[in-house]
Length: 325
Image (cartoon, rainbow, N blue to C red):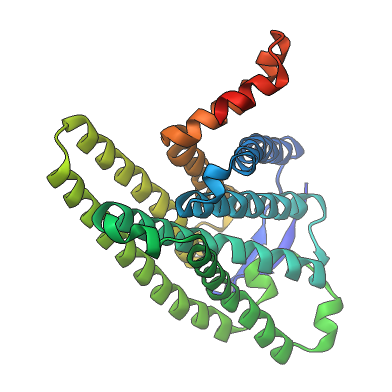
């Protein structure tokens, strides 16, 4: 059991983390680690499948997809590490915490922008098919990914620069509870991020809304089968759910601080629910949308997953690979 005194930057309210039984803490951490392990296996198999077939890394859609898989895998690893560390060590060195927090924020903010990029790619493919071959090239896709990385790296880097300017040097030699609001506690950082998140959220939401509406209208106009329209509608709904879950990351700090100020005795439960809802559940959406629903990727992915069973049955190792070409 542990107790830790802390102050919420957003609310300015001093909050005590209540005592928690060892069994509850252990159960929460086991669930978090098991989910991380399961998703890591899935993501690793998807990355391996992507790298084994040139049909994927010569296609803009799958390049964006695998970037999101890698980004989600890294993000999940970091937030799970932060969650477990908060229980095991309570406090860690500021420099280590800073590295973990900055990278976690960077990967968390990247997912919605990658989703927006994938939406634009689908919009061009369906609504502007004659322009697709020269608009969605591999070099342009890589350039777009570079722009996304720069945009998402800007907020955490500015957070660090403001903290370096405002905090005394001895601050970086302390041990703290590793949380964004405790590490970057200057009020200007909070207001800066509110402005950035508002602009960021509006841009991504409008991009997705426009592209998906155009895709739906085009699909309905061109389709001769009710099943294809239903499939397009279901894909849009899944993307919408994924976007909403991802966008929760932009309102979580304020919402979590408000709930903690109202129910301080439930701070650990609130923290755990937000951890699952915002950082874990959305990571299941990518394999569902692009691993199981995409026919081309599913074909190669299931063949890769069946290799152990095929080898146990005595199938020649190269036979499946030859069949995939």
